[in-house]
Image (cartoon, rainbow, N blue to C red; front, top):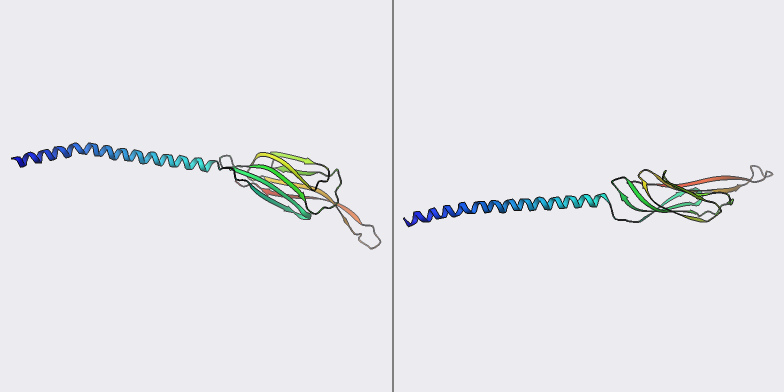
Length: 169
């Protein structure tokens, strides 16, 4: 008879352990789902806004025009990129008229110009520029060419040089 009582006790004990085991499994599932949710939210936050990573990108045009654009972080939510400044540099040193503008622009969100004959002009933009926009610099210069014939005088022509980069987000 003692054997029968022990069996009954064992069955009763194992039936009591079953609900607590279920609770432990449920708690593990909840903890796993919470961890997955935290990871997913963290990944979405990281992908949405990148930390500022300054890059310098150069655009080139004929006759020594170099446009250097300082870019920053990209915002993938509204497809824009931060542009800090544009440096327009004349490396050729052609003839310049003091009324000729040196220009810089960023898509349709920003434009400026300066006159005079600087070798290089730094323009501060400090704007978020939409993807697909050109960020450009330009200047006008005069170039002297020999005459067509030995007896004809040299001619002078005005040229506009433009160098751009394209924002891509």
